[in-house]
Length: 128
Image (cartoon, rainbow, N blue to C red; front, side):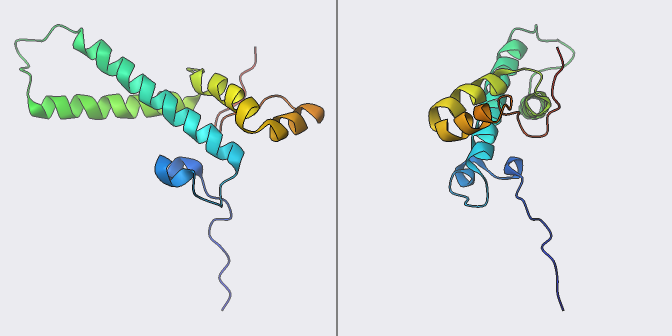
């Protein structure tokens, strides 16, 4: 009985960052892209957390551990979704710089072939 492979390509977004670097099934370009996206998400989490601290607390909704956990979950999901959309733009800029420094041969080959800089995974190209 022949069972074909279910997934020929591993999605780097499904791997934890500590396992991403050592995975031989993920290309270096995908590793850089995902690391940049995850860095952007961490930064967005910190920004969202800082903005929530400035909100005046309501006397009708007292602060509790449960509400803190819920707010953290909201911050995490919102930061991940913003980062995955590619609209914030920090990951794309960081990726362009890192590819030039870490993967100069890949960037040079793409430039020679007339391609634009690498696009982040799962994000549409933005038309000016």
